[in-house]
Image 1 (cartoon, rainbow, N blue to C red):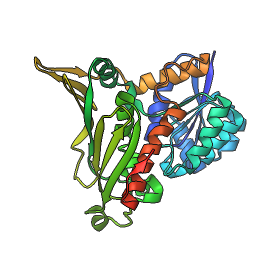
Image 2 (cartoon, helix red, strand yellow):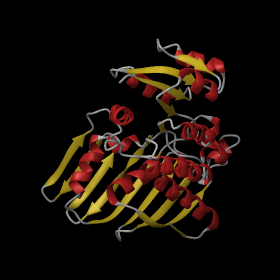
Image 3 (cartoon, one colour):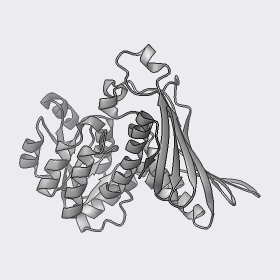
Image 4 (cartoon, one colour):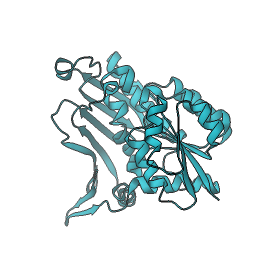
Length: 322
């Protein structure tokens, strides 16, 4: 079965996915939609079968894609997904699902009631490190986890605005929250403290906090803290350290480190996580078998609930129950 794919968005992630899709048998990248026709046409130039469109409805009518990839900034989510749900078109959407829960809640209802095939871009679930961690943790008692995303502020203007990105915890550190859920289960309660320390004095128009820390209580009884900053000159540390009765399990961007009494063992990431993510989604669209999709819209909404609850807690100074 040959599949035609449309991509909404003309940034780096659209290209990552499009490049992978072009390597797959029976898959054609047919369309790009941009905020302008010019941007869309430029994005389409690198793909022989693709055409650029300046309007989503026009693309859906003309290209008739079998599936769509949604790669847009957090503030742009909502209407795009609504159109896809209305037409029953499977979609893969990059995280986060939005800047708050309003649009995602509506999309979730449509996706759930229709049984539409969806995937959300939590690609770290598909890494060798994460998959090995699932196996390692199976026979261990987890006590706590410490997550971190310590880096610099992205240069794009929308990222610096609270109503553009939702803030670092929602837009970026969401990967660590999602990894916590993937490996340790669901969260009951969050308490957060965020602050603006430096970046609002360095750059104009910064409304997001540049430091934050969130304490999470898990349903299992385990506890966790996930912290982030975007005030550093460069990225320093990203990962999730899990502490168990048999030693620590450190999930990093490039590898897994398992420490025990006998010493430590490292498991590097070898496979391309984006490739796995795309293969699972395309297989599901082609066959209806969604077992390979590790993050559906329904599942990703639970991660969004946690990150938004952290934002609410930071604003009110009170813990938020989930």
